[in-house]
Image: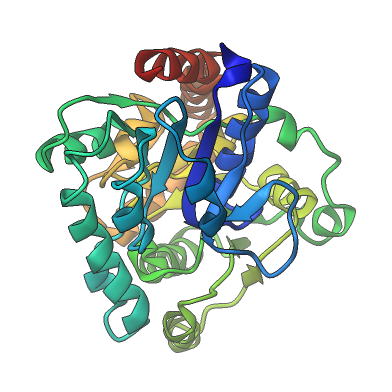
Length: 357
């Protein structure tokens, strides 16, 4: 059966190394290992050739009712109009859509396609056989938009990707007697880097002067916001704030290795892979309780419902200095990590494929 069925993945664009790009590659690897024919089709081809990533224009010629098409939705795209006309059985994987209001005045074009993306989603419920959220937060949104057959498929994460030797230069630069506060994620207004800076200001001024803030991630598409963040850091006269920009995998691993605590003040996440990465590397997490963050964390980590910067600063101190608390938090996070084990998510994927076959 597997040899006769083609299961293709479709998405607006593909970026190797980001959360969705990694999942798409992971799903393709799994599907091929099961004997399915599987490729990736995109509306906008990446600037450099990636084997098995094709233009969606090629897909029309192979669409049949025996195929399964997996559509990853997280932004507005002309694809949604074409997909609903195809004969394939259709699985939607919803990665959530950042509210467009965050990007007004920051990236108005992105705000426009985000707004359209949510509108397009509400028009797809009659054409999808199975709608999956990568968190229950996302699944509930699908229900609210009229999708009848919904479930949860967490992001498929292969932990072996983190079993690399950490970058030696990063370790040399930051593995010292300073306390390292880490955040990993795109520099984007919904992630509220300004709140992380204010927490760090309180921590460094009132709690621990020998501290450092490491902000890891690209600002591509949010350059105006990046300028605002740098201006705020200057106004607060903050020292020891490091903006790394985009980093490779070995450097990313090194930043987790030197981190004492991971602080997330994001107001909108559909899943938030860096939380999983922090769990994997044994870094205690303090996070603002919003959107999918509580779902990803489960009953682990330390969450806050209000952005009281000084209180959060003292909470950082407590989780670092109180060994009992730190061990409890890290231990709970490691237990939660088992829910995202690759064998578990592969089994879910297989069940969903069989459900629509």
